[in-house]
Image (cartoon, rainbow, N blue to C red; front, side):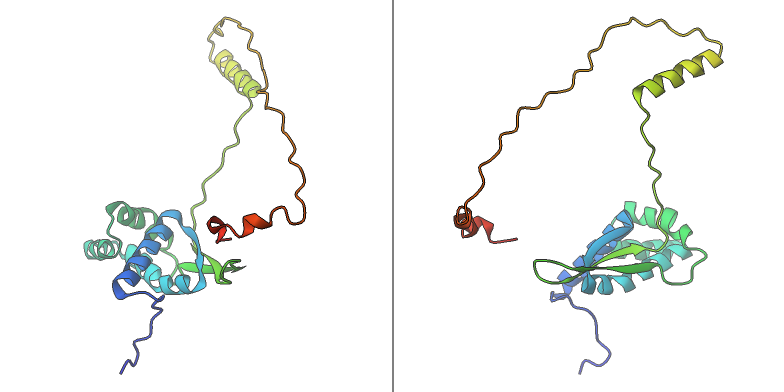
Length: 188
């Protein structure tokens, strides 16, 4: 009898099931957020929570156990150096599942699975060329250096010309019908 043996098998063999969960755990730790189906996210959640809990301990045994699951030294070091310290104040609830809706092709429920404490990268706005040049001149004058006289070459700010766009004739009602039944276009 299979009492208390419930798990989300994901319609895979045991080795394939383990490989799927390990791969998804690696991707979740590297990207910190991933888009997947609801059943895969629910199957991954216990493993991801267990890995973050191991990272909070930061012992040699915990690192070895995490390597046994993940199989990659870079991901293990990322887990213990960056992800683990972020969750020191949190006891549980290291991941969250956000519902996105259903997938068009097979009507599967699609979700975003992410770590609750995500390190956001600051996006720097690129300075315009004129502002950057003025800033460099201002910095060099403030330092007491004479601005370097550069050869003034006229640079043409030529906009790359695109070839003229030709309009396609409008398709007739049955004009595109033969393309629907081609073998290459079976998928959506």
